[in-house]
Length: 308
Image (cartoon, rainbow, N blue to C red):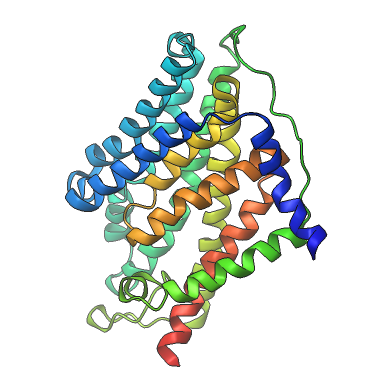
């Protein structure tokens, strides 16, 4: 057990040896806290749709980038065409993923009334793959035709290895935390995300529908891990080095704004931890395992508490 736990700390030991910039870390978390307060006070994202999503993603992300550039005198980043292609790709992916109107219109026009609710639930999970998949692919194609700057770092190197068993050990206390969080009314009102009976429109949930939804739900978390801990960290690494982990965390927190505030706050820690694991191991499997495990716990535990 002790050996398995030691693997989990190795990436953090390496991170500490590489002299992390604690001023930059503090500023990043100040920005994260500030924008959590703004969103949960004024609900900009909910009220203004695309504009609100643009505000929540673009402004904090750019402020942290600007602080990094000034602090490290790396103004070459702001002059790089490659960087701005990456910046726009990331922002377009995130803002597009917030749009549900297109799916709602298609469902309204092609699905019977009693099945629209379930179809919409399925579409929300599928859109994660669409908007976290296609823009990055286009980004990679464009970058092939733009010359790399001499200041850019090389490829991300693997510096640690963590066995699957270690991630499973880490998952256990997280599920305990989910259990206590699930005791709250806000949590139980939001979870589970699977379709429920909607008698007013004549929809009654069945076991096959729940199973199909949960499969799509799990796959959406795989896509999320690939995008944030895979694509975002690796594509930003040549410009920001290990600070790409913090830049990813800023964006990762923002996708949680419609969720209970405690979950949003905890995502700032979870995103950073999983980012460190991905950055130093070169793999997203740990994040996938933990993310999927927590997601399924959030689906199952509220149901068990209601029936207890």
